[in-house]
Length: 347
Image (tube, rainbow, N blue to C red; front, top):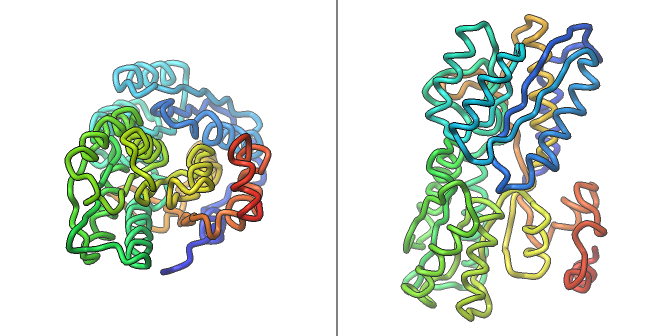
């Protein structure tokens, strides 16, 4: 399997059209995130964006809002930041379809929109920055399949569950499409598939509980689209007394996800440092404020796009990808019951 590293992401960030080390431009830039179910927005995305903006545009004012998975609230926040004078809005939409009207409103008032992490398929934004979501789905599925075959998991008697992200999130749709590609020629049938409303772990757990009752030991693995849903799935297996838990994938390299990998309960995750995309979004925002046209490496949904390549993480490379690069520290992850398994992995 191809070895994905963070180097590609770093190169791609440098490849964006770079404004000066700092810009004399001033103005208000809004950073609107979709939910608090994932801790990444508060802990990584916004701090990364704010830090990059402070370096690139000291005279700029950054406004941050989180919609807590409420599309109506996000619309109110969007209208509010425009009323506050925002000239660029970085938008990670709660509902990718509904966000089309927000782009239309912004463009009607001369405001630029950067689609962040999740695309806006029905209305071209001014730019889109994200990790390669379809590639992520393909990577976690192919990794799971390789592990199942390495352990001689039966393709004739068993199959996998697929736990996707929110049905209103276009990025979740891309991850789902990648998962389908990764499983297509694997020989493993998909026993059941679920789109998790709002990416909510309790909803993933509830659904998985029903599937454990329905399929039992026919479940040889689970492709879960992120660490939150993976955690819900693992909890469902444990509550049902399944031991060992079949291999479960994840995505986002959250502390909880990393701990589950270290403990042997989760098979893989995806490291995609949010600061990478946040810094890219800040560069694009400043370029747009300066009246420049940021360079894009591709086009997606009729929108100039920059995609970054993430890193696949398993217990075998978690030390080198996560800890040796200081994305996380042992003090943050190897707490309590995780101290001994961390030590066993050389962390």
